[in-house]
Figure 1: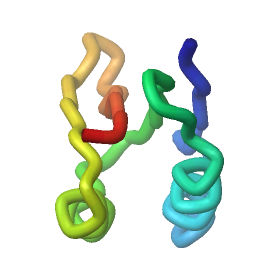
Figure 2: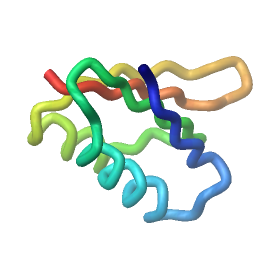
Figure 3: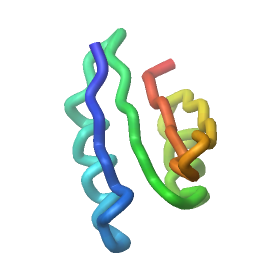
Figure 4: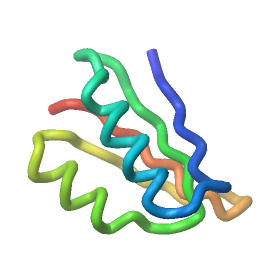
Length: 71
């Protein structure tokens, strides 16, 4: 099961805040998908420090799709 946060129209730091709140609710085997128009370097550091894996891929429309799950 996946949850999606569409942060493309949000202003910082709202996408980061919403993502961190959603991670607290993430169940084992569940995936969080974050959609942005940027590369969220601060988020990547937080994810690595807290035992999450992520994969980022730019889409044709310029959206950065980041898939996050627990390790």
